[in-house]
Image (cartoon, rainbow, N blue to C red; front, side, top):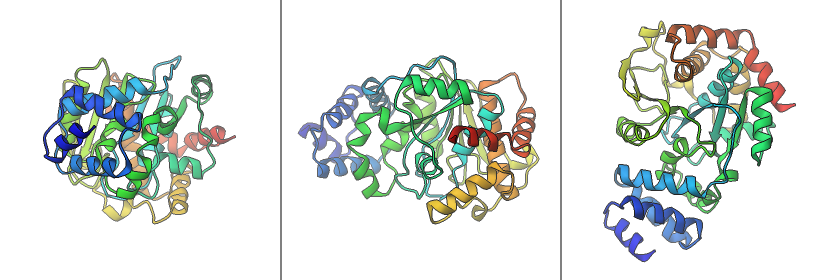
Length: 327
């Protein structure tokens, strides 16, 4: 452990094998709290390499509690840590997607640097997390969506949860969330907070047998924010969009604000589902749902996907689905 700490303290990069070992040692509680905070801080100060991210990812997946799903699904997940304080766009998009007919296995966690992470909002609204594959499969079969709470299936994360919360900033663990869904889903819609991370993900995901779309708003959001230009990176494609390309006007940052409390976030969440939210809030959820849909259904045009997801919200199918999930 001492060698790993010293190497990180001098800003040297870890090999893939060393990165793997680092995560294993965390799982074995070989680092004390001070060492963990120091190592996370060292890694914040420089870009993560492909080898490091691959090693971290592989270790977490090898140490996970396995989830075996009976059907192919898509994960809709962002890195978080963009410091934009948006409402829960990816979680809402996952529900809209499921209500539109696309199976979803949503991986999520508590917010480490925000008021309301995916797991926080679900728990606040009354959802009870499942702890076994059988329960997740039953949920997926009945509702076309299951929610996988990361700490229940990644025991290693429990050993860093308090340190991440204390730091209150994004760490390399933010980068791992979208890559380590315990169900190993083949379809991924991922939001990243900068282009460098987008390229890093692309290198890592190209080695996997998966369909993916990595999205990033060039003004710093880890999702399609409609506040300006955004980029999409797929397995063999890379494309720049403007909101007007999709028939939308540019949104203002304040229109995506998720509130100062979990209660405010919960109200926005419910308002989107019952189609009483602001036009900006509904539009941004619709667009992210649509781009995720196209990953799973590449034969559909993005305009068709937008129309389907828009109708799902307006008809309140998404609201009804969420009500059924909670009952």
